[in-house]
Length: 125
Image (tube, rainbow, N blue to C red):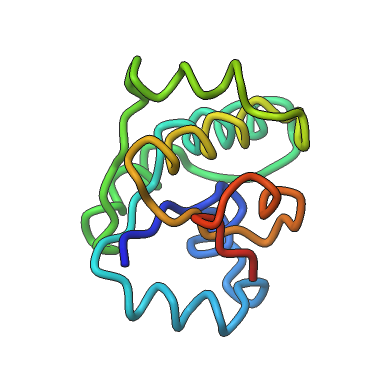
């Protein structure tokens, strides 16, 4: 299975491991490939700037390879779905992550129950 991490799962993996559910750990251990979207870096960087999170973005980026994670860029082909997705969730970061997961396709690993409404590709833990 190929996995795309929701931003909070990605953040927990590096900065708050006790919040990462054991079910998520099992899924990550069994995955064929695990991706982190540029969307998540963007979201974390914004939240660091406004004081909602603490993270070292350059260090986080350099840690991807060591953690066996793959970077997923934002591509133009990911964006058309954003405009037609139902408004179950209005967060622009989550909407683009859903669109990426559906476009690739990848399974989106999240703890957010609202995202499950979008697709069977969403794994809500």
